Image (cartoon, rainbow, N blue to C red; front, side, top):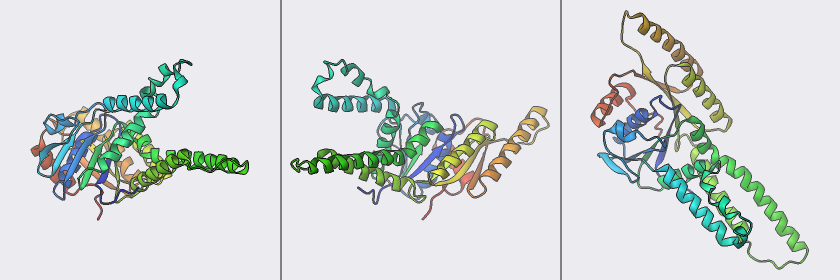
Length: 311
């Protein structure tokens, strides 16, 4: 399985409340000038529709020429995933009710790791849609990083399980067991191929670049540095930082001056820590931008060109 001629992905990561949704919208608006673009919120606490000034749902909705947006229902997707897995297990193991395991199976959707798997499969489905670009407004950092690393983690486990399966088949052959097509190995090979394709896409800076969004404050900036270190460790394509809500107005108000001084410290931190990446500063705007027209003006003024759009 290979995703050829599919939409290029643009990931926006960061702590909750730093302005990922607005930054994602600015990126999508700029990309829509280059080709057909889909803007997607994968944050369970959706506010993309509020930023765009339109009501969104689970299917893409036209925002402007060449730009669509959607807000998948992550909770609903998790419920559907849990039911499908439970049905599959129950169809193979009829004794579950006898052992009272059927009640446990019904809680699959709440099992650790399921949300990450559901979000990853959602991204995979999005990639097959007829768009040139897909901009993803991710959930807060911890969850979104796990989603992006999941193909690599799954490959580690699947390759190990595959080796164990091959050893079992080898021993069967040694004792003279009839050689038949092994369905387990077939499933493992299919899954490995799928996750290899996802890993290849996610690790390419041309196919799937990552932008971190911060406010010039201690916690978001320190978290950004930690994200950078994790992404480097796993060879993931970080390419830029958006510093949002920068105070630029001149004032003699002592409180405002103190806030600007504090922001300057953390802007310097980001510029030093991310000196090899593109850094964009977006000012603190009151009221915050709402609707396509306001977002277009801000995108043109402060970004100019889309983040990390190579080739």
